[in-house]
Structures are given as structure tokens and as C-alpha cells.
Length: 74
Image (cartoon, rainbow, N blue to C red; front, side, top):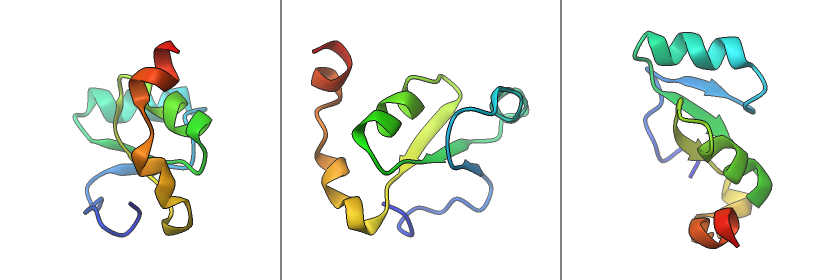
């Protein structure tokens, strides 16, 4: 949940489209956190090995209850 996790040392992105930033942060040992406001965005973020965590807005709290196995494998 956005605002409930200390992300001061992390690279916080709004998506996973910036391959160079993801790679650089990962290689430097810097955690990568991605904001997501849909199930598809959560799935895309967590599919990237560089991403340590996903932040969801308070208004989308239901995303915390996603069944990631079902979402990924059907």
C-alpha cells in the first residue's frame, strides 16, 4: 500500500517500461518498487525479476487481495 512502506532507498517507478533504469538499479543492488493501479500492472511489475515490491494506491486497496497464482497461470 502506498505510504505504508519505506521506499526512501528504492527506485520508485510508475511502470516497467524503462528497462535501463530497472537494470541499473538492480545491478547496483538498489531495490526497485513499482506503482500499479490495476491487476495487469501488478502482474507486469511482479513478472520483472528486478522488481522487489509493488505499491498500490489506497483507492485500489482490493489489489492487495489478488490471487497472483490465478492471475499468472489461469
